[in-house]
Image (cartoon, rainbow, N blue to C red; front, side, top):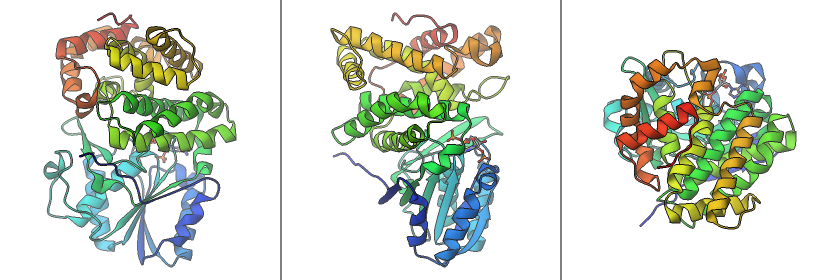
Length: 396
Ligand code: ATR
């Protein structure tokens, strides 16, 4: 038996935010990030619409990128005092992820983070509140997924939480909110969406329910990511929808080692954070080379290439041309080809090679590795990371 879970309602297209007026309840808490939603007027718009719908509202703001356990616990405490019957999260993946985790500890004050670390082990939610997610980036797709990533900064560990209980009830995919993303954010989150769709399409858990969503997301991202970064409004709209389609696919088909590698390198180096989508864009062509050594997976990449309108006489040539296309996209978005070139070379060779064994071990044990189409061990993962650091061919 397999399960396929999505939000009950996904409102999309122009003026989708109007859907907020249709929700019923007494008290809504709005969770958001560090200020972009306020600055661009979206927060006021959401507040007014909820007030028009008869809600008393309270704001929980200041959720940081890579939200912390403290932020989550403080938010849950505020929710317990206010007792909302709707949680409305507006912002990038960070705000929505944090709000999902707050929801769990609001409904179950006596459980601890450790109690929900095992995937699909959550208690039953919706005893106190329902959840509406409004994404402002076009990549994470937290508005439709069963996932949330929370960071324990004391321990230096990122906790990926996974359970269909935290798949939102309602998603509002209104592209007017994505129009204000700066170019680099649109580029990085867009390549995150492309990695979601490609990894979901070749995942061991892909199926007839997830494939059409993944392949349509790939087509749309192929056509629209670059123009969307050059401020083409129609393309931005398409990217917002494509990210959501990719999210519906990967929430149910899961991901692969591009994400395992990005999770474990995001905060590993002293020079600072590698943006998640940027890391995915660097690793994706290398992982395709590694996975495509298996013939059935090569055939899946060839199907992706055909859907993107890429030519080739056989699966090998199609896969090579798919990699070329992804590298061209990456280059035209100004994303570096390898870790050594990231941020003017701020991640030095000495630190990289010193941390390599541990990063490789952690990436192999990441939950996303389980659904990658080709197995990998610690030593091979080290070799793959070396290719990603130095931009070398993957010939193993
Ligand atoms: P992701 O979706 O990749 O997880 P994030 O970590 O939630 O993104 O947000 C990354 C940054 O993009 C944050 O600085 C966020 O600003 P706020 O925390 O102030 O909200 C910013 N950001 C998100 N959506 C944006 C938008 N539509 N316009 C401008 N900035 C935005």
